Amino acid sequence: MEEREKFIMYCRNCGAEIDDNAVICVKCGVPVRGNKRNVNQSDEEASVGLKVLSFFFPLIGLVLFCVWNNNYPEKANDCGKLALYGFLTDIILWFLLVGCTASTTVGY
Image (cartoon, rainbow, N blue to C red; front, side):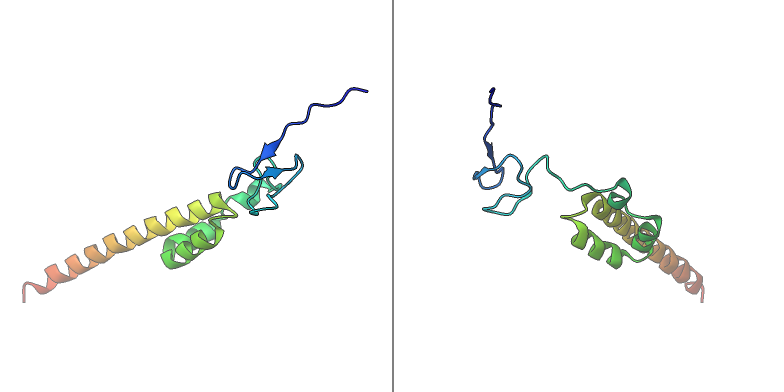
């Protein structure tokens, strides 16, 4: 009977020897490369509603970014980017509003 060649795998985080079928390292708990859990593509992308919410309420987008950063990095990045864009847009609109208001009151 022919024996299949066995490769020894090591954890990329702590260097401990791990089983070929391991999902996480038993020593440090870090997920093993190549054994990611199956995630639907729709679960990985932020929905339109979350993107709009992150843009108009940047603080919510920042919280979502912090919460999802480890488990859903693409979702977290979408919310984080839109929170930043929303924050910058708010600052620009605020300066325009203050500038327009200041220019109308200068003539008095």
